[in-house]
Length: 530
Image (cartoon, rainbow, N blue to C red):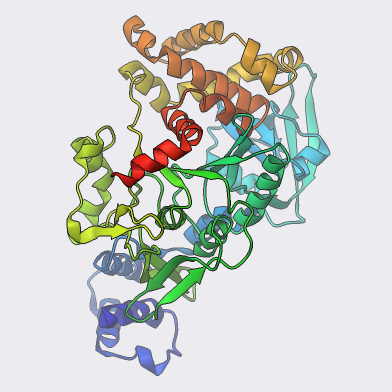
């Protein structure tokens, strides 16, 4: 492994630098350099040496592990934006509807909101050039609206009930990307936080959310890490520190060239006492598994859901001269009990990438007894000495199967084709004013808004889009479609908090979490018997 890693680093550097350190001058380095030299001097056709080099790097990294990778300079920028917690632009969320840029909402405190841009506005011109009806893509919108802080862009928007176009000259600024999607009281004593990623701002966002929930008399917490693919290790450690006390070990890492490094709880946390439930599923990975593993190993809370992804490899970024980077796996991480969460990858990257679909085919998403671990992967929690397993993700304390009762071919087709999203945008465009007038807050909306005629309109809209109605399948999917419609409308009228307040109603994983909290002592005893 040592020779391979040295080779990769050398390959990336020999092509772009003439001042390599002596440590990079080895036989594989010279051999690859000779190959490029011969191609340049003698090959029958011209070759793109940059592309050849990049392809070679990618192929070499595939031989190591599934998470070592090569990123171009552009990919590095796109990857870093959501983790750094901001980008530079005008501060709007948008969708493209009927070949027109439709503003869904403005970022609170952002430059567009400050200057008067509103949800529902349609962007017709950008800097005097038409952008409607030209088949513009999301990437095209990004390229025109994003830019360096302090630069200006002028947009002309069409607003319902206003004649002519309205011009706004907007000064671009830093725009926050929030890692917490929702934070609200799910009942009088239980708070709910939905965490999408572990970014640079996660700890601060969590503290703000907790302060708000505690002011509302929160005693219990549901932390939702489903579909959270991870992020920064230090943010996962800091968040775990909010729940663990007395210098408890949170995670440790070690690798061939990296000495063992331990991360401990260091500061008084905001929720070291109180009933804590953590939700995970097959989309919960990396930093999510660090947090869930620490909570489970110290018996601090109860984990609910389905087996997590199983990513226990630590990557470090090594920059190359052209702005691209190598993301090399340098260590593995282990939970406090010593569990390695990384699932096997000895059968190659292609097979590794099929793992989630293979779980589905085996029935693991709906039947807990389809999951088997050998005794060699057995570990014990540090307080209650319960059996837990390593080597393939975090196994929840209480399994909740994937709910497919509302799925049908009809539901699949209108979701896959984006029909629900397009319909909601049209509906909001026509009814935003009346909804805000008739339902001044989310409480009155949840209680009184009649979704039935909206669903009927959706079915008619879907038929125009090429999805023929199927009464039997519509009846199967009616509950989930109705809830999804109502949640999407609430999101576009208010925010993602309101989306989750509606979407989480009668969700099986949420119901299980509330049941566990209500019957805490009984559920804890049942866990000891497993």
